[in-house]
Image (cartoon, rainbow, N blue to C red; front, side, top):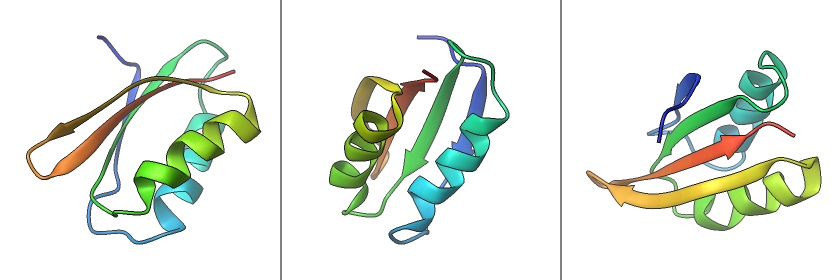
Length: 75
């Protein structure tokens, strides 16, 4: 799937991946897609929760090269 922006949050621990995703999403227009790479084990819970609370849509979550890849559509 295509995306409009990237955020490499590998090496960052909770809550930094979500905080950086929030900041990056704020610069995007509604409907645009952010791809987030994270390797923090807590991100598997934190990112979906953040999306649900903030009104964003998590389109995809998959493992790739020791990290999770999240595709988030800005609400």
